[in-house]
Amino acid sequence: MTDGEWVELPRQLYVTTVCHCDLCGKMVARRFLRQVHDGQPKRFCDADCARLWQEYWRPRYGNRPD
Ligand SMILES: [Zn+2]
Image (cartoon, rainbow, N blue to C red):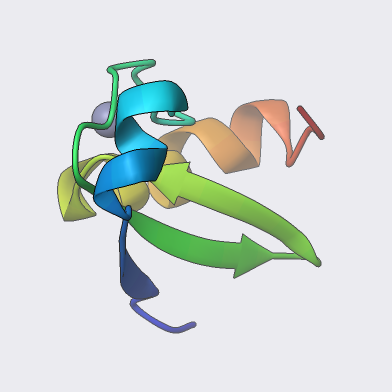
């Protein structure tokens, strides 16, 4: 399991593209934590959400595609 990687949104992109955390749904303003699970890219607003998703959400609800 990797810690994922932080992806910075280019300024032009984050003005026009709304990006939400895959766990809490919070809007991601400038950068997000990207992790790939079973080939599905996931976006999280921070490491806490990424951990919670792995430890809580995934075992219960699985890795559902968006
Ligand atoms: Zn979040």
